[in-house]
Figure 1 (cartoon, rainbow, N blue to C red):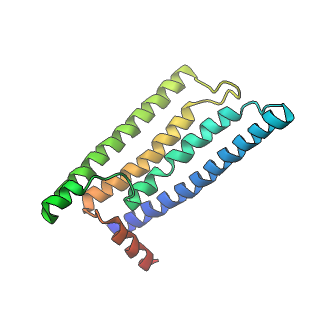
Figure 2 (figure 1 turned 120 degrees about the vertical axis):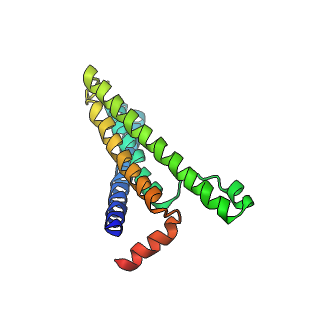
Figure 3 (figure 1 turned 30 degrees about the vertical axis):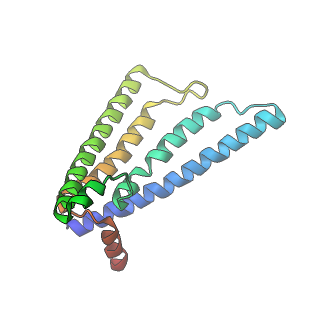
Length: 171
């Protein structure tokens, strides 16, 4: 059951990261188009900032689940390595717990911000796109990262490279 859940979260994280990569590419194209229109044609693309705000927010946050799943987030492990393997595992476990709580706090705060934006009916300046859905989507994506981190804490799988090798061999 845990393996199935781990595999499902791994595939969800990869899918979200692929979509996020596409969104970052869209933001780059929109920005290049806007710069070209503003500089060469002297007709700015109104609403480009609104689109880039939406797309980059979701695009950047969308990489968090894969980052957590692969273990490629910032770790300070030199102190634990200095004290030996037993202490290293303890520091890793403590760091995973702290990461879990920080991610959960982000989910909660992003959701609250979305509720605030929905309550005020906040929209972007030019295109009048509602801002609340962007915050709710970011909260949901961070929720996926939090679920992955919770699984890491519960299973004790701190060696994410070994987990990924196992997943590759099973598929």
